[in-house]
Image (cartoon, rainbow, N blue to C red; front, side, top):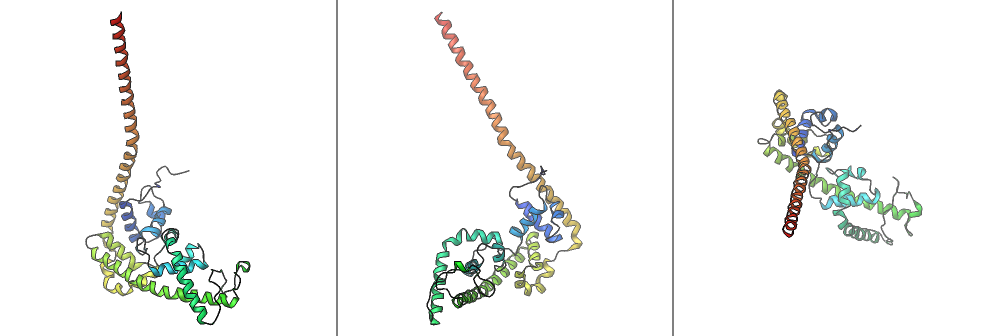
Length: 302
């Protein structure tokens, strides 16, 4: 049976800040317990909201770099549409973000990157004294043996396929090095921006603390900041009662916000009924006036 109080709509800013605060206290776990502090939300919603949107290690709104798009292209040659597998190579990008990018903005660049890959691989093959016969994607096993021999284009020998796969791997390694350098700059700047605003916004402080505590691979870029900033952003359990008080106030805000939204949602329908009733009354009044006028005219004629 569905919970009548379950909220399926978009998350409000108050809910997001409350969820961030709760994760900072309890960690990214115990989602059912955390959901008990968010009226109308369940553990699954909280977990997905955190991992896909609120985790400060997620590059949700960061512009895609050329290196990232090359990595996505190269991986999609082998692992077509296996977004979860591809996400393991793209730091800070979720599988859903990757899928959306591939099916939208990336569509405009696929031909451009494909042509560049074609040119680079053609030069590679010809420099080796071999005939270039193409570079169509071929799915292979760990030994570079085609999984579907019937789909291998004509002229693609096992040696040719091995050379192409090695070239893909070299390109992937180069682009990954570029991406990691860019990500180091990105995460360090994001962390320092949060630190700068942490004195005026407790949630910036919480986000910075979560970045330092993160178990994601990208957290390695912040290791050099731990000694200097750990004490500044660390959660103070001595102030737990104060934080609980703040939590109660925020939970009340969420409840009040929800009640207000429900009231607003009902208002148009109620207003519509009132308007409809007044319109009918008005129309009836007009009809009565017309009837009276006709009666008066007939009386005069008589």
